[in-house]
Figure 1: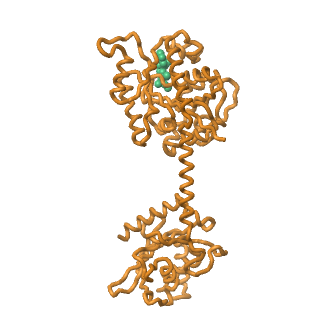
Figure 2: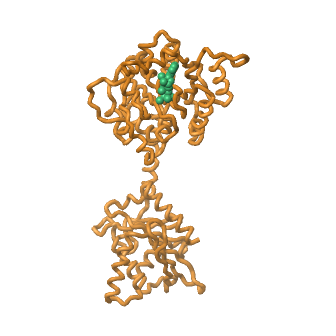
Figure 3: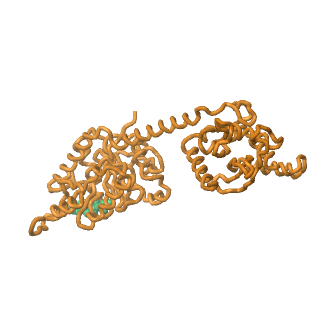
Length: 463
Ligand SMILES: Nc1ncnc2c1ncn2[C@@H]1O[C@H](COP(=O)(O)OP(=O)(O)O)[C@@H](O)[C@H]1O
Ligand SMILES: [Mg+2]
């Protein structure tokens, strides 16, 4: 069974506001308060505070957050750390991943498939790069530490990111940090915290009642002769900050317990529904596809194989063609002016054959000024750039007669574009090469979308 962890992300575009202190210490408090609760910590920043604080010497590592973001399951990478907290080793190569990271919801999916449970705490870099965005969108709860007006101003970018994707902002809350209680103001806003909170609320941000005071004792925990980073829980119990962390952790535990369906679960369920819809759409496209090749009339499941897919612009007819039938048809259509049996003819046929697999053929019937049918033939490369254009007279087509040269073309058009009245519909036909091993793949979501994109380009071209 899948586990779906609850994700707590600490984020702010400003450095030095207390993100890492919050992330690392919260992990310790949460674990200490509920010893049975799995708590996992990771950092997307390139310093190694997490490792320095939690490392238990001598543990073999399978990789770092870099490997996680490259696709390794989190459960394969976590190490048991100090204070009962699990952690993922940090990496200073994460910047290499920014460029090609596949979208802002990747981490949410990775968390759904992480094999982790309980609470995952994510510390982020002081910017909104793609990894931070992923950590924000994956989170059930985001804490945004603010210590002064500039850091409060910066919050708007995080809120804007949520607006952009239409995500509910109720997971976001500001927490005043590094509050110096000695500073007092006259008037309504008597201290730093009250002032920050008032400004936050004025801007429509949720701001926690709990805050974190500035404490020389806390500050000294990562500057000592041992070069260690000590946790507040064990080394600064006597401070106000200890009580504040306890209160904050209690608040997080409450929302953890109230969250029956974490975001990673909801996203996974949404993905499954999408998959189901795609499958249903694929089956609907397959339905009604003829079992025979409309050029030769023979079954398609024989040894000759399906080499091409056709669909009319109005999407009312679609199906597969034998490779040889379609290429044969193209050869007789395009090489009809070269005398059969000549070296030129063989050469032309070879070119047509090779081009057929690299291009899309479009047949656009129309009437000439005398009312006779002709077909505008276009060949485009797979990106939709026109390569070749011809006009082919469909002599006798209207009367139901073959002309001895374009017979296969007549059959193709007759079977695919004829309307109820026996006349050609006001549409056109496109023929696409398909993977002969897996021809039906052309009807699957992604590939079919490419087909439709190409049809849109053709429609613009022929308009
Ligand atoms: N409550 C606190 N009181 C005093 N100093 C703090 C407190 N929280 C953090 N600091 C100090 O502030 C500095 C920045 O904190 P840090 O957590 O690294 O911020 P960020 O991750 O946002 O850059 C560090 O030197 C840290 O020791
Ligand atoms: Mg930090």
